[in-house]
Length: 290
Image 1 (spheres, rainbow, N blue to C red):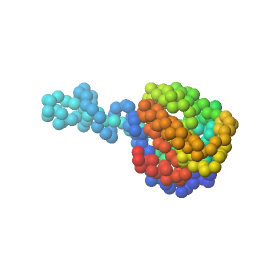
Image 2: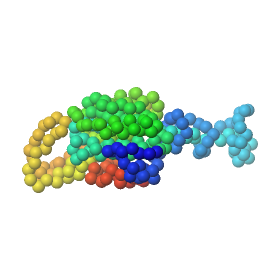
Image 3: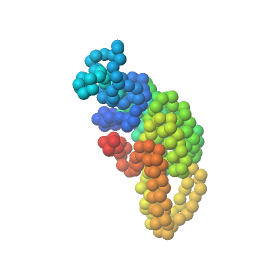
Image 4: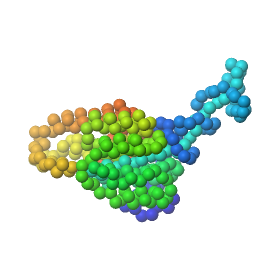
């Protein structure tokens, strides 16, 4: 499809995404034939299991090898394929101002939405901080993609985050098995995150977490005393990095391990992305790893 001029998505991005394919790792439900396994049985694509023949079944689906072994008639069942419903959940809280994370998230979301739409999959958008700033249901048309890109371009960071509540709400609201792609810095309690992710998993949704980080948040690479500013609470504190670096690194490592474990315990697919790596390279590498 022709690509109009957007700040967060360029023809170069379109060319890069055109070489990729996004497939669901679990079964999904959808409305048209696509690339992803459906929970419903059919007579197409990939062998799944047998059932006994009943009058009226098509003879072309008989398994003659099974008949030779058992002297009974069996029908081959196959997995149907279907399209994917994905909702891109973008964290727009004030902490996403740091190191240009929100702009990075916008580019990632735009690329993923385009990639899904080229596969006739459906991409929606939720932008959340304390409230839901944007709620665009999944779609795949060129008009829908234009609305999604323009909504992304208009996003601004504001306030603190109530991301966990929004994930709970989304898990209940989504009408079908869906994929939620969360793009966030995840500065929240891992215990709260795991409950939200388990809720989504209980509702049979699939989860993919893109965790945006700046290396300064892990390494504390400052040589002189600095003032740390909490962008969500506006609290400020002066520190001497040399005095705190070892403890800081230990605590941040423990926090990241907690986030990773929360995702693993909830069956969520977790990817850590550093924002100093160009978003297109990061996304291509991520898709190749999958």
